[in-house]
Picture 1 (cartoon, rainbow, N blue to C red):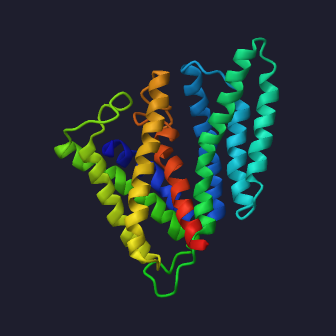
Picture 2 (cartoon, rainbow, N blue to C red):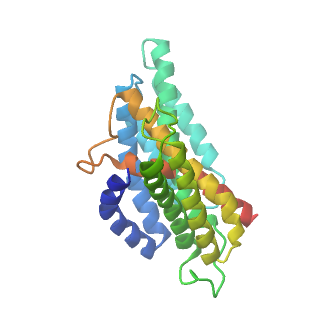
Length: 275
């Protein structure tokens, strides 16, 4: 896992760094493209698993969710967008001759769009994170840049810790019906790594480092859950990878699966701080 993510990072880190330097608008553009590519992959996997959908509409809805988060960072219209999308998907599903097929199409379309649309929470983190006090280690960064760095490095530290510990001493497996390689020791190693990194990053952002004792484990567990959720989808579809965007290393969904679940957790944390 670590080797795969490290190699793909060589391709993904440069555009991410460039987007971070430019600012939140560039990050939003990258995430909209990510949602487009991931949406196509998700609906392909769902089809392979036996769940038909309105794939193009679902992908467009996922991209729209990201764009809505970009243009209305503090707005409250997101739930209205989801409601309208759900209605339109239901109307589109009515064209199926068999109502049972129509229900599957409706549910699958909405699920796929909302699943990929979770990446929009990265923008919520960027736009809601508290300002970085002057004199802090990361004071040269904007609040959006700083909190996204925390999210990204938090997830990557979990991946690294889980892989290294699991490979060395991993003996007790869990969730083998979804991902045979996962071990309890790797889980603990990943949680320790992401907690340490999160404590350091919070201190660098001018926040109380002890908050990392809460955010770190939550971030790590959510990242692991995101990875397992995508593995469940791929296993149901009988596919090893979500796509072939990165030859030999899978698709875009394979690279962002952890962020889909970790983003909302960090967003909840910064919302609590902002409150």
